[in-house]
Image (cartoon, rainbow, N blue to C red; front, side, top):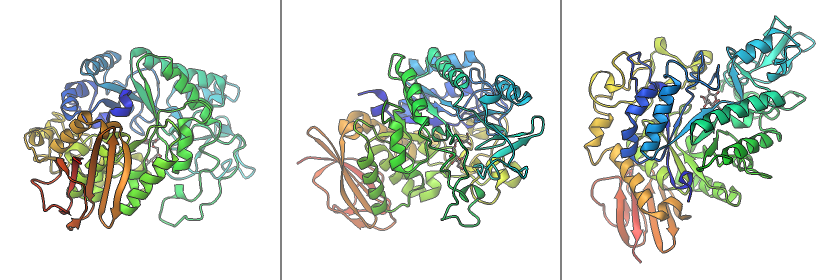
Length: 520
Ligand code: TEU
């Protein structure tokens, strides 16, 4: 079994993991210094959000050079050192490739915008104004407003699905395509174990740029980007050949390099990114749990839908949180977050764990004067700001939680003096200990790592399922609510429980999850 099937991936938001040079912003040396935390936790791979040179308008998702390291994060030598240190510990290292758009500071864009006949003009998406001088069509930016920005120098608009400082690249242009594939090779040559690919489903747009249809479900106050459906601006058939080419490049290197696609689409469309004609990404991110209603029947339904939709040979994956979405501890509460951790780490498929979730870190309220996220600054009050989920990792009870010697770029969660790695390391009942135990169990029991999934019960607040591999049967029973729940389980040895001791047989205590190995 390849490592990315049995293993667990851990996402690091590099600004917020560990600062080594006292500027209040995390960096590569900081990550290297904290690798032993990841080894002790028991994860297998680290995915680092973008670390390339960037004006940081969208904190690295606006890349100004695909083949270098931003000085705020360190140097290429620091990167090589981090990679070697990770590999020495048996950890894989994945980078974040942002192929849909570059920063408008990228030299390519500077050339492209300089004249209509510049050789790189067609590397971006330029269109004439509509007859009334307005934008070429009704496509809307994810960060609010039209997705088209007028550039007076050449009298045309360029397209940006996100910020106006993030210009979409034109993947229909063969030279651009080659240049980007070369960037992938640059990092594979250096030894990275794979990539998470940012907004993969956005990469190709309809060649004729028709207006997007109105969204029939649109309600005022949802933010403009929901007003129209992204029918023509995303998920075009031509994207699949590009994903397949990326995969062929990954496969041309030794040692199971992996591609993970960031794709927010309904399950049925998502599955196409495993590859219909040729293999595409190994793991199209499955975000179903990231905004799921916390209800047993609903969760069981989406697990069943997903398992049923998987193509032959397609390996599942699960995500509870990332740098764009509210943290699980805030969505379901501290007690229930323990149950959620059991769910994430016992479903069939590769889990991706977001830094801080192993401590039960919650969203942090950001005072208006300290807001950093351009999304929140564009559409304030919609509750879409992402700063609350990007706050510094609390390591210990010393100044600034051991994250930095200076005031961090975002505030720490006020509970850092008690909720931190050092405090939880010595506490067998802590969230961190629970994660270590769960990851340890996954390593010990093939049934948990690769076994088949079968639903046992989904009623009221109880979700129970079995994982089976060969003769080994492991049952997982979750109480998704705050009241005791009767449950009928086979006889077995309890391998793990989220609460101290064991309740009455046949009863799950409030917010309790148990894992047992069936003995007959
Ligand atoms: O996010 C893509 C995406 O779909 C976002 O619109 C996401 O839904 C939103 O941030 C939630 O509020 C990726 C990155 O993960 C995100 O951080 C970047 O801002 C975005 O692409 C542009 O690169």
